Image (tube, rainbow, N blue to C red; front, side):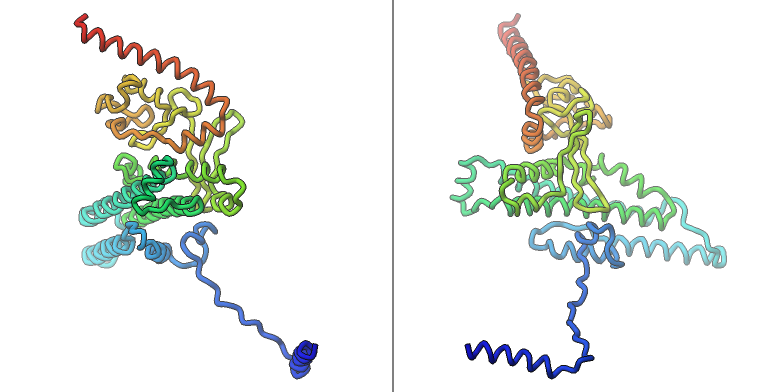
Length: 373
C-alpha cells in the first residue's frame, strides 16, 4: 500500500514540476519508405523510381535464388543510345532538336536479346518454383511420408499459401518491369518496336502472366483457403484472389493483389463455349476442355494431345506446335468441381459416355489390325 501511494505521488510531482504552457512532444518514428509490393498495392506510392524499388525487392529474394531483370543495365543501354544519337545528329545538323525515329541496329542487337534471355530465365524459374510448391500440396499421404523420411518436413498450410502469394507477386512485378522497360525503349526511339516485342512475348514463351502455372497458383490458393475456412489467419492471407460467376454463369478467375494491375482469367472454353471441364493449357497459354482440345487436334482421348500433328494449331491464336507440351490443370479442376458441383456431375456423365465410345473404337481398331482384317 505504501509503495502504491509513493508511486502515485511521484507521478503527480513530475506533473506539477512541468509549466502549464509546456507542449508535450511525442517522438514520431521516421516515415517508412514503401516497399515495391506496398507501392503497387497503393497504385504508385511515393516518388521513388520503379527501378530502385525493383532492385530492393529482388535483393530481398536472393535467398530463394529468383532471377531478376537487369533494368539498370538495360536503361544504361537506352541512355547511351540516346546520347550517341544526339551527338551524331548535332554534328550533322548543327544542334537541331530532332527525335530518334525508327530502328536502332546497335541498340536492338544488345537490348532485345538481353531482355529475352533474362525474361526467359524468370519464366523458367517461376514455373519450376510453382511446380515444386503444387507438388507439395497435391502429394498423397505416402508422398508426404516419403518426404518426411528424406528429411523434408511437410510445410503447413499457412507457409504454402504465403509462398504461393509471393510467387504470384513475383510474376506480376516482373511483368510490370518488362512492360515499363519496353515503354522506355519506345519513348527513346519514338517507335513501336517495344510494343511489337511485347505482343510477340506469348509466342516466345516469355509472357509470365500467360503461364499456366500462374493459373494453377491462383486456384491452389483459393482451394487451400476454402479448405481452411475456420482458420482466419489463412483465409485473410489471400483474399485478393477469387472465382466469380457472371449472370450467365460464366466463371472468371481474378487476382487483385495490386491496384496497378489486375489479373483476370476467363474460364470459358472457346470451342464449346461452356465452363472448361477437365481443363488443359496449351503452351501458348490458352485454356480448353481436354476433350474439345483433342477433337480440335484430330486425335482421340486414348492417344492424347502428344499424338497430335506437330503442325496442329491452337484453336484460338492459330500458333503451331502447342499441343506437345499441353498441361493438365489439376488445381483448377479441383476448384471448378467444388464451385459448380451440379454442372460438373452432368458434364462427367456426358463425357463418360464419349470416352467409353472412343476407347471401344480404339481397341476394336487395334484388334482388327492385329488380326489382319
